[in-house]
Image (cartoon, rainbow, N blue to C red):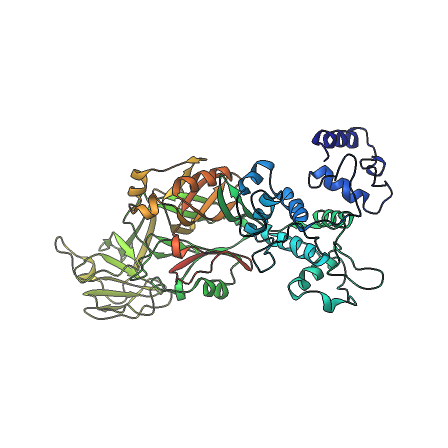
Length: 539
């Protein structure tokens, strides 16, 4: 085996003495003029590949499937991270004592390999040319990277021998110049790859792959298996999408994604399973979808302002209606909530918009229909009401038990109502999107929260606050990038994971059977069968 000290010495010579790679003479059996010499040296310098003995590389020997996976793993993980995969994995022939165990476990957990379909992986079997293509393209998918096409598609004489599961991968690698055919026009999909050939393929792959608009994270962090996507929110438009377009609607995760054309989608706020009423205030595209101040101002919300900057904030959302603004007889109505159906004995004042539906669906003691321009078009008593597009219905289910009520008795058709909105306690009034989540688990780059802070946000159920469960989470890094993550953990371990990934702030989302995370054509988790009330969408 090659000692690391020799690698460091070689790097020193290359950088500071400008010795050409071809003249390094690193392996006695790798001639400087060999077609694969530069590729081998590139991988050695990256710490991806080693020799087979003292000063030997054995370029003509076959490379095993386990060895090729090891090369991929060493590209993605540090030695300390690799140690977290030393366990009995899903393949019966890759036990803890097998040298490739942690590397194969990482590859399986990350979706880079799927095995042979019979519960085995075949770590010591030679790797075929088509399986190399499959593994490297799976690595692309697992990391969110791209492989630009530089060649026109080739028509191999033996294309019919390429396995269906490998055909697309072979084509992608061929067009990128990573794997080429032979001079006779064939590809040789089942031919075993030599160590030299495998080194050339992987070195070309690493030279050609490029980062896209996002990065996928597939690894263990402090023992927690993480699947996440990291991206700059300024490069995407965000929205809170409601199930079938209504506040209490329900829709499958796959339907959300297909309907909206999402690039990323994650389940977000908690909701009541019996009524599908969401818990927490939601704002999308500057439009308030629902107001729930039950645990305000303690409840945490993921916020995007009008400039696309993201933050985790806690605030209350206030609405005030001013009847006949600017006139001496103007009347003010405060403490208005949005799209929350009051009970038959509740005197709360509520504004209903089209996000509720096309009509109220119930009779109110007093209701005022207001068009998009703020003009009262109807005054109703004890009736259902149609909700105008762009406008709203302002109502009380029953009159208040105490105090004067000058608003509803005096409002008339033709009057003007000005609706004012204020985010009390927020750092900005320019909120384009907000979704009440919780509890908050990272604040100012440190683990945050305990039983008291969780309870203040409305979370007392041990299944949420104490036990390990499948969860989703939203984090914000110091550079402003957003992390959408899913993992099986308790809140404390989830918080530690988010801090380890560089988040300055993070908040828990709904989890369990609601956990879903979609990234650009693939589900990092899900889609689950449970219908969701809403999803946070980026596209």
